[in-house]
Length: 133
Image 1 (cartoon, rainbow, N blue to C red):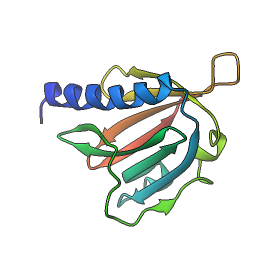
Image 2 (image 1 turned 135 degrees about the horizontal axis):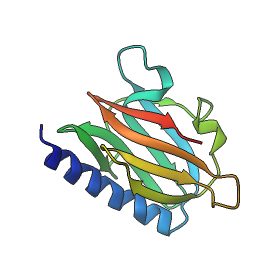
Image 3 (image 1 turned 45 degrees about the vertical axis):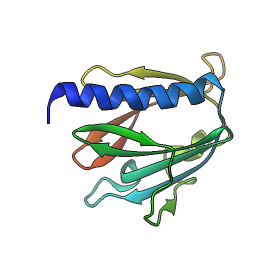
Image 4 (image 1 turned 45 degrees about the horizontal axis):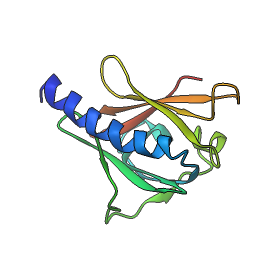
């Protein structure tokens, strides 16, 4: 696993999420396949974010985040009411940026509308969600 592969994977994933942000896609549903271990709702093997403009499924590959618009075969559980997702259901994705050290910073709601920021990052075989604000 190289830093270059991680950056390339994160870059492709950022492009997918940026297209959703450009369209002001509103988050409608969050589903996840739990990752083993103590991470709880903040660590998922697969994380599917469904927007009014389309859905994206995130997973890890070669140490980075990978996005797919094709839905996975595994059974996912609803995470709409889990922390932190319940705070942004119905909110538009407004910004996506590379995070130093890997991962992506995502912002829901505009700067003047009580924004919520999360970092999505690959941790082993899990997509980890870190709440920033």
